[in-house]
Length: 402
Image (cartoon, rainbow, N blue to C red; front, side, top):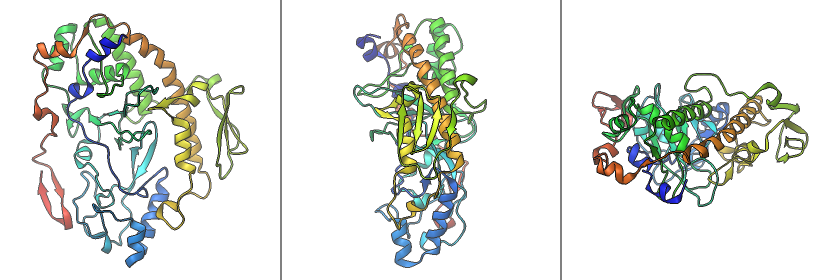
């Protein structure tokens, strides 16, 4: 697609205008790749007293053992001072930690410096999140990814993007789409255009730019249908069954498997291109692993290497983050096999995405949306919706209407 066309394409920020910045936990220990370690960390914290508890907690200006905050919406975490906490660990929940990496998080507002409660408020059944990836000039990989679980919005390259819920209210209500856009697209394409279809189209066509993710729009109904179908395939792949449907699989002859058992404490990861084999530690071998999966990048960072490093890099002794599995857990092997599968399938779809972007025909440009009265976006559409009948527990057990 020529640069001029790319530069004229509307920003995702103008199509899905309400967005939330990434979470800022402030400390690493409440999140991790296995839930049992998080519970053990919590138990170590509440068993400690005085200065030992404070040192383990890792206080910041935003959160200390004496900070009083409201509950995270939808989760029954405590609201009393952590200095007095002695109860069990809140049940960890699945979150997306950067691209393609599902981890666990203790859903307690007292542990998170900036938890983005407005994001938690709309999470749940029926919700999807578009996660913009931070732009890195010249870097390969998708500009936007999808998640059904709450994403923390972190970028592997340290350049955070934005999190854009598909719906502004809990239960999949009120699409987060610029007013008038769906009606304009429906009239232009001669078919009913829904918010989920627009979401799928953005996954298939979104490209990075210094201004943010741009989403070229077409006037061609056939091209639109192809793009939405491709986007839905990408969506199913990225959700990995979380939004319903089957887990992703490669055909039998291409399916990765453990050829040699992984060691108890692997520290290195390498790739043998000739054998299409992932070498885990000194002894572990997984194959076949397509080169495209090993080399798959987001924001210039190789995803398989990043995933492995987040599970094997040493933690500082004496910290809560040092409480982790002593041997490689079997579920991590299954997750690694699925990650390889997802990245291999995503790489296979990338050429189709490029073909789609070059087949738009006469596009709908940002200026064209302005002339149609769709842009500029009303300021109210960029703010979260009010939830006036939703009661949440505030600091020290008080309640408030939102």
